[in-house]
Length: 201
Image 1 (cartoon, rainbow, N blue to C red):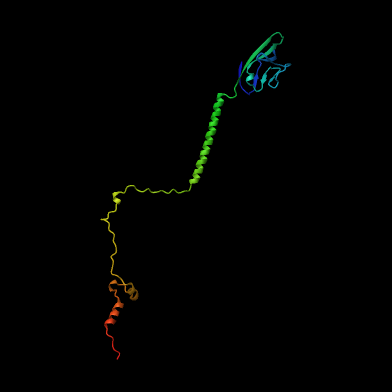
Image 2 (cartoon, helix red, strand yellow):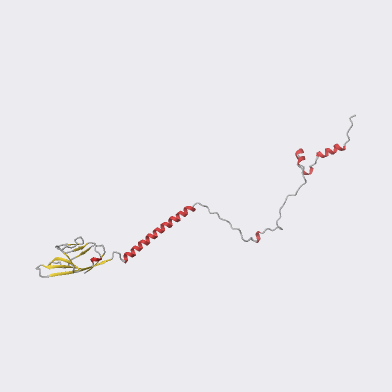
């Protein structure tokens, strides 16, 4: 009988040679180590049941790999029965465990990367949130022919200059008609010069 046990686990070996016609005597490990009452053995490592002969191995290691033989004696004491159990101790870290560990590490990295990216995007969004975007008109490189100013067809109406106005006379006499604007002061002076002075005698 073969058993594969992961390193660090406990193992329980049944003694198949112990039956109605035989009585359990001891266990023999790799034909060198005897596990039985009255024999000095590692009782912290090995424990067995006296009646059933079941052997319990605590926290197996690679050193515990090998063949375990259960020795039983017949009721009349003339015959012996032997049953064997071969134990294979596998490494605690198997390829399947390596795949699982890699998957866990990748998942953690992805989650952390996503969290960092989300935090950075949220930070940038708050920085630019509420700012108005002003569109800048680019200057036109070419001007269409329809938009060219045509001097021959476009005319600007300018006011026609009227006769000069004497602001002083306008202020004195309140004449607002440009055609009747007359300098009365000069007229009165001419009249006084041309008129002879009357004698008072």
